[in-house]
Length: 433
Ligand code: HSE
Image (cartoon, rainbow, N blue to C red; front, side, top):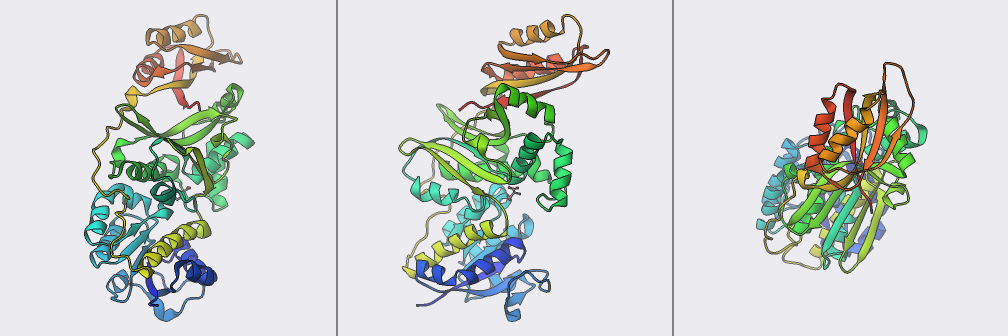
């Protein structure tokens, strides 16, 4: 049986993990694909550093084009990350009729449309299990196990770095800055972890998931994004008093005339499944019309978990080649173009809200704030006001019943302009089960 030859472009953490796994579990992998998978070439700008795996020097090159243009290579694994070079590498490989495996969520979220089309038009596979939540096999599940279902809702904790930060803020009462500093020192977080904490990484992943659900590449810009940087230990403590945990949540929900697609911090009931997903773990909760509720949980990053997802994609291609398939699934696993579905404007969202107002503690303040909320059809369900400090502000914390986001934005902007208010209001959406 002819082996399947693989070229790896990008020999960093995940590239080295991929080589390690292909070597360490060779027997299992060969048994489960029915063919040998051979590493034919590895490209990286740095071919000197030790990656903790033994690789024949003759396989290494500093030129990615050597890999893409090698006629013996069947599968290109793109692990360089970033956009410009990765786009060039993936497009070049697909046009050379090589199957591509990538972990690059930013690339797919930005340039998915052209890359999916290039793969399909060239009759090759573009696989990306590792792009969303590393080892959690959600891409395969949506393409295969869950394929016959209408999925009505997806709620996910898709970023391990933010989840780690929020968990430590919750459990240790630390500030955002204190946790980030510790996480960077321990090597858990990038320095600074901007794309993780501002919600961009989560939006990339949600873009890919929604594209798979709908069968066409949705525009990344259509997904609302808000990060975790403005949350304080106070907010997390008040959430706890109200019975909630704070998580950076990705939500996609089918509505009658479109879908909601949003990424933002959310308060979720303490006893909900997602509230118990802590530290660097990722989880995706979804509901399908026939499967009902399902939960996917695991590690979303790191050398070995991400390598596992990359190698599973290589194995899928190797199996298909072994069986002599003449065609490959379109990357989004839909054969006909779907009609585009409207993504709701956030202004039309209906949600309950948490507010923390910073206001001077004097007579009439509470009624002034409550009055503005009332004028905007926002009904209060609970209030906490603690502490009294002369000439300084105190937090006034409220939970609301369900309200329209457009009204909330207007009310908060009016409240922020009051003289009795000393700083911007913190607003967090409450996501009940
Ligand atoms: N940086 C991401 C995270 C993993 O913290 O989950 C890669 O997307």
